[in-house]
Length: 151
Image (tube, rainbow, N blue to C red; front, side, top):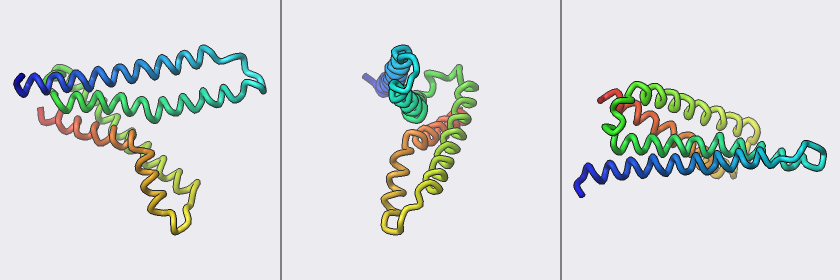
């Protein structure tokens, strides 16, 4: 196998993994929604759990999905050369959205939890690690935008 075949296989693997992750978690979210009983005081906990699952989907699964797709594009960009305008627009929106949501979440974390002086380094590290799906997606989107401009 030459270098181009390895790049092509890696890009297809990233893309396929992203589609599998998105499909699995989307199906899980839909099945959870369909299995909810009628709302009452006794079933309120199931609705809260479903709401948390929606947040998990929005702030972890979607950034992971887009990160894998962008990684596939960055490995072998000529595979999607005909979609360069759509990739440019999507990567710009993902970069702005990813960095924007990261900044807003960090701001809200600082406002809602003012750590004592001893815990500031731990607070910063856990905040950065907790928001990593968003800022990694934003960094990959920025790199994809730059690569799409060069081509």
